[in-house]
Length: 339
Ligand SMILES: [Mg+2]
Image 1: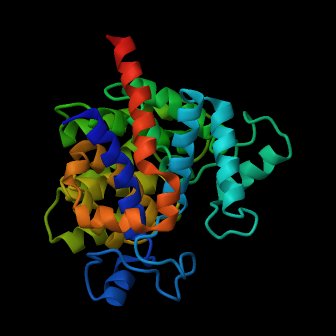
Image 2 (image 1 turned 60 degrees about the horizontal axis):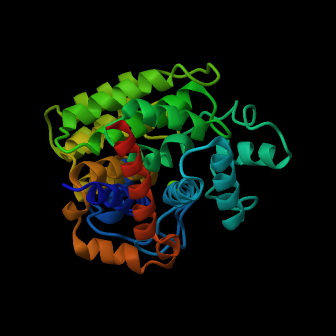
């Protein structure tokens, strides 16, 4: 499978899981009752959804918009820099009208407001401990095929301005390292999960020491439940009840690796499980499907689903195929230097 195909798979996966989970409610039973079973296609947000009401079927949210903004900035800068991460996140914030938008997460809002006051980006993220860090990090993994350590290093840089705590960096590093390994030719799902756990441990050594359980252990727990007995819905409820699916980083990562493994890395099935898991479903879906997409490649995506994403004006505005080309140039230059 070509590198291009894996990069495009990672980017479309991010969007697929995000848009698929967007209409989900807060717990699995609520989502199941509202939709009469599995969310098995793109759906609009229901009118009573507290965050996403008004969004049409197939619409991405802040997770993918921020990931794509970061990727565009990395391409402009020729790689990952702290200044670039600052610029990308402020640009996105202003574009969505961040001061009044319900999409801006708590840590990102706090960080961006401090950055705008002119504070040092090494201190603006010291309180950032929620899942904005892992939800937008996938492009960093795509830039480092086969190099999880390089992916972790760049993940630390990207987290610094808004999520400079060890719990947030641990989550972002887990995603970046898992994707870096998913990008390799003969990657197995076990190797991807192991890379995620290793990335979590390495990431935990960076940033301000903060309270929170081990991301690696939550990943282990999510995967253990995913591989257990019982039907798929029962295992999802178990993940929701035991691992959690709130904005907490260890919960998000445990849930994301859980649904990824339950779906055996298939992007569409991963999206279905993430959506019915509920909670912060768009973020769990975006993370899990970005990994799935890098692992299985763009060919694993149903063209009809790709067409729905392509037709959405917000997604189209980002020019994801162009982003894929830019990321491919940077990733292959890096590979060439390693040889
Ligand atoms: Mg979101």
